[in-house]
Length: 240
Image 1 (tube, rainbow, N blue to C red):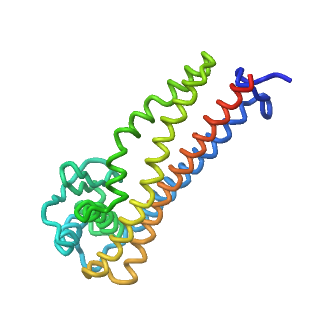
Image 2: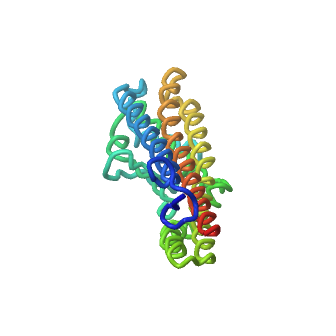
């Protein structure tokens, strides 16, 4: 029986490398999570919060209530580009959040404030994530080139190094998940404790943040599947 791409395992259905199905599954999971986030955000961006506070105003109130006074709330371009920058201590809100007073805008703004509060209180998983960012960036950049070179040269050390480097990127995704979930939990509590949203409104914000969390779950799953693919390819090369 023929062997695919010299990796040392049989071709799959119709002569297709079977490990491509791992990539397809990961891609579909990511696309589905992204589509759900966009659709959920589209629904709740049309629902005005009873308080009338914009994302900017809600963020500033939450930060003050948490005793965080050294963080700025600033606008950034794009859609769903909201983030917290620990280097500049800025809660950066997209156009969809900064000046809007929808449940979606307020929920997203509160989530980013959750990250700012994590930073201010020394939340350990956030500290760990920040520490491994350089290594994760290097890993995601160099993993595939080294791995492919290892396949071409049949060099086991390069294959192993490529897998190890990509594992750093997977580790980053793994650490990111609890950080994001915790930030959302802090956000929902803050929204209620500060009176920005009522109980019914908080349920809408929770749906937005839950949809956002699914994108991180999908990203982790896709990374794990990619790592599994590397391991399978390396194993096939070893049997050649």
